[in-house]
Length: 158
Image (cartoon, rainbow, N blue to C red; front, side):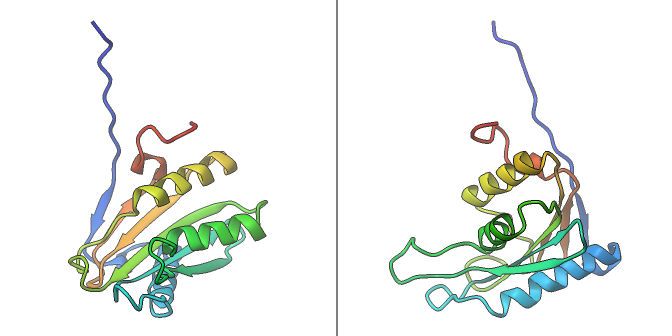
């Protein structure tokens, strides 16, 4: 008989992101700003992501669609790849994701797709440290994960 194992992770739900710490509010509002610049002409689903680095710098990313689907790129990967390519010595401390549009109930926070979850896991592996994740809906409701690795059980290569 095999050994029984259990996977758990914890998160908190806040009715408003404004009740969070100053760094969280800044990175969430940056993700909201980033969503406005998304290139989402095919889906009208605007996603913004922002990271706060260990030097307090904030970088933005948004989804970039392409008529040759699936050639586009999600907001999370856009910003994480940019940071990895340009600031590999820096550590991600916070990642915020915000979305609005008709594809989902945008008052509820959305979570990253599987590809983005794997990229998040790789960032954690590279920097040898997890980071906080904020998932924010259009009404301000926010899910907070202190240990982001919990979002993807059994990541590839780890």
